[in-house]
Image 1 (cartoon, rainbow, N blue to C red):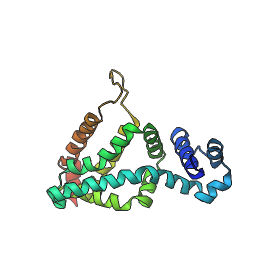
Image 2 (cartoon, rainbow, N blue to C red; image 1 turned 60 degrees about the vertical axis):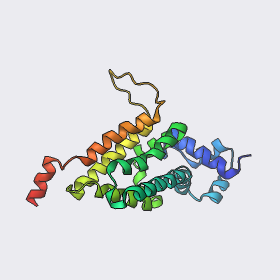
Image 3 (cartoon, one colour; image 1 turned 135 degrees about the vertical axis):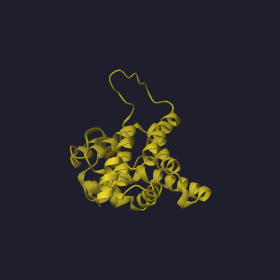
Image 4 (cartoon, rainbow, N blue to C red; image 1 turned 90 degrees about the vertical axis):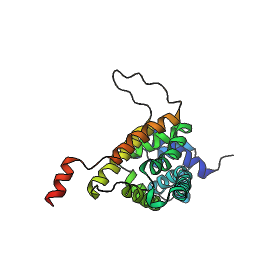
Length: 211
């Protein structure tokens, strides 16, 4: 039997994913869960705290696996010598594998990214893992300015968010259901690693020379 706390988490995850965080009220959630408002305040406190709990429930196992993959790669190659591909695979593989088995998780993360909530969520809940991976990616971009490195990481987050939302649908492209998650992972790793390995753009070089 599902307890009250799990009912609330399940309903919040469903509604945040389908309607968005901003459009979903606590009253929507308690009606969907079949519980009273007092139980939400008892278990979570506020709507913002409830969102944090929903996110942690799904991302904590993913981040645990990310750290395990990163540790294995560092043991094999060395923390200061990890190529961008190995760092990106350790970060992306657990999320994409979960996404393939949990479409609701994809909808949730896509909605939160679209509403601009992910930076705040990451700062509050995943500072350690962000520092580990972002530090590694920065070391994998020698000769690139901090500003341009930040833009490349920004582009990576956008590409990941789009990938989590599902297959592309563009005029003239016949794209079916994603059944091969390994192929999907290979595609995004190929794309992103090439971007991180690229030399500084000409405009960025010109700015650096002027400084």
